[in-house]
Image (cartoon, rainbow over the protein chains, first blue to last red):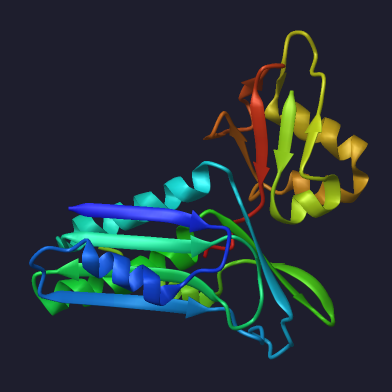
Length: 153
Length: 81
């Protein structure tokens, strides 16, 4: 089981990330990947001109790794990778790349789905939206919590 | 003692400050009160139980005793990724 997770302070290149992930595999039959993009509007429809992701120097990357390892173990997939941006992002920029590989597609789909629900709730970040109306630190939404609750045993 | 702040607390207090705790150390609860007095604009947030204290990379309760050598951080609620 190969698990990798890292913070990316600079621009995230999803095509490169996927190519690297594919190159790391051996005889898996399925790969599911997800790319999250920074939106130009917040949940209330207000304009977002920038996003700032504050992070802890050691615990944030550890949290990404723990979540990726949980996804790999829970669904028995052979490889999981997470690359998450930190720092300042502009609308439209990739914020996260997550991928799972398995012998067959179902496990890979489920692992990637679980991975994103966990990242949206449990990754150690503090996210600030900046816009014409000012700046606002945000917390997970009810929708994020509902998504995560789907995986409770 | 280095005390580090994240998220909204870093806006109110700064990224990191240096404090001299009492020679016998102090609890996290006492540290919260000292910080609230020094930074009134952050007092309400520091009092929130959802703002967690982290010492040497481990989340600790308010009764935890810290010393001059401790690396303390305060975590507002996480946003997730």
